[in-house]
Image (tube, rainbow, N blue to C red; front, side):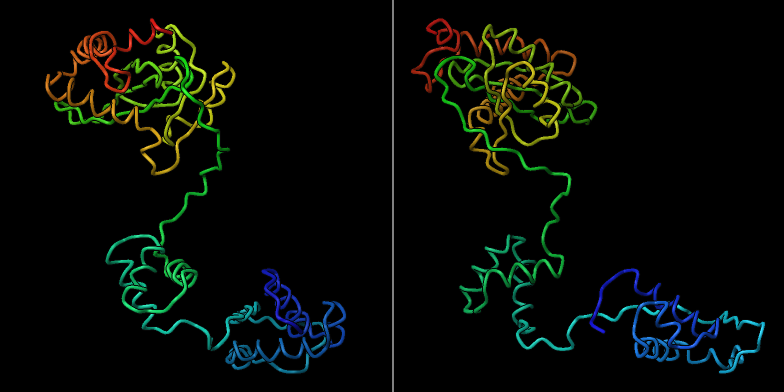
Length: 318
């Protein structure tokens, strides 16, 4: 009989052995009832006897069955597990010293399989990149990929030809100096005019992100056609569906590619250096300080990226 990895096969063997040994039915009758050959039932019995060598002595097993009585074996295991299909030797397997070098470079730098493969080539170790990936996966040395992450359809990045064509948004995580708790700044910037808007919150969520973007759109005076954000939990599927119902597209940046959000990342650094760090804001006065800084940023601060104009002047041009 060919090898089978059916998970219910041990139960089928147990059923057959109970009919053969406990019920005392003939081997051919058991084979016909189980749908296998007579020789298969005999092999299952030999395996069962090997696994339960002391059953006959403990239960006084006899080959003949007394009419009207059944033998009960309390010290045996009827189920026979399937043997592993793994080969006893693998001639083409990687030598142990190559596996040790793969593990060494992985633990030395904690980098991906391609970097480990590059280090192996530099030292003269001949091994394929696929073998390095398989070895790291077999030894559980790769970062587990979350099964909850879903594929997102790529949306082409639109050109910022007028205000609202492309707006980037992000959240800045800050530790509150008084309470030592984490607080958040919701930030957004219009790529065409460099107009910005910021809000201070003590938590983040998709619903809060939707309210922040709606208030920012109302204050800006122009409609947000496309909003680009990172892959944070506050910019998930619910937010995308909510914005789509309002005629706004939510576009996500590539994972671990901060250059995709270069404008908002630069603004996050600017607001921390010019507003939060230099003025040392207190939690109870941070809203007022952000309001004053936004008025300065949007109306007075010159930007080299827009020919040394202010965001307000760019909005007036449009």
